[in-house]
Image (cartoon, rainbow, N blue to C red; front, top):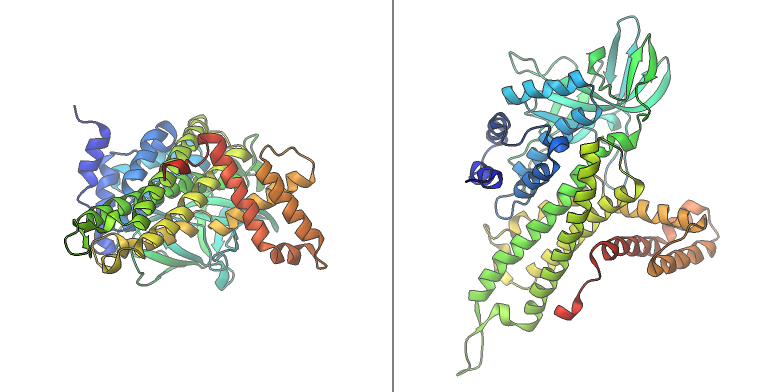
Length: 469
């Protein structure tokens, strides 16, 4: 009997990156309508949700465009509606699936580039006289930026700062139409600009989107956690609306990206080893044939990558099980789980980038050839800043750990304790204000973050087994 995994692979294995973004969008529409993966699987069947992402987000020789398009649709767009919406809003996803409706996720703004963290300046102002919201980008920096699937989507989840009677209530989610249902033209007040050609993934459209005084019905507010009643802001559950709630979709995305980065690196190493096993190198006359993969430095690199990537896979599997329970329970993840997911993303992507770069330096012109997988290595660059920039996540790990250290909370790992001691000494020796001092000690900050990451991984799956190398 054919398994779901086998059916999904059959359905998706022929997908190519050598198509226009319009053609790629149509392929996703067909996949959505097939219901091979349901929008609700993120909550009802997380194992299937993550498996689908592992299969599609690790492009190897195909390119990353379709995999990114897929995770935007199922995780960021549909997942946000499931996580933030009321029952009626969640039920709309059945219609979207039947129609193959595509959506995008409008969070990132022009003023929130690399290393800047989460910034939301787009506003959604409640206007009592009209009983509607007015969605607006007040400044150029508040325009939504690098929105994947932004040119082909007809729907969007937009994150905007909710304002009622002059008071800002912070970022909230809104489900909106981007285009007219009949003509397909963008609706009044919504303008979209193509971000241009990229080094890889050009089968994916990326857009800058500007909202200029766009009226939204009251029902546009994703209202599982908050609503407008009698023109006042009302919290509808014990759990209040905040960035951590919105960030749930970023957490599932971080884990999916971490796993995809590992699989990409593993596939690149696997294909390159096949080449290296067949590539003869010079040997003295009369000596047996010598192959590239047998050279000691490259042989060591293959073994090192295998050990490190397998260890990270085991760690991501442990974290996935923890996150899956949170998703099925519809609960908010603990701070420790949030940090562990950040560890998955940072460690998996940084190790994959490092290992793939080292591999490319050792295989000569093969690393320049189309079809080897090296042409898509910028996929890992996308992974580095998507769903939480690696530097920002590392900074948060360091700050949270230092806060615990200064508060006298026990730290179980000796290496983490020592990294805190070293950073505290560096900060104490500085004669400038704390922010400047923190930046001055950036090396120790990232050393602490590195120790935190290794502590999480070692506790879950044990130390790196260098004896195999």
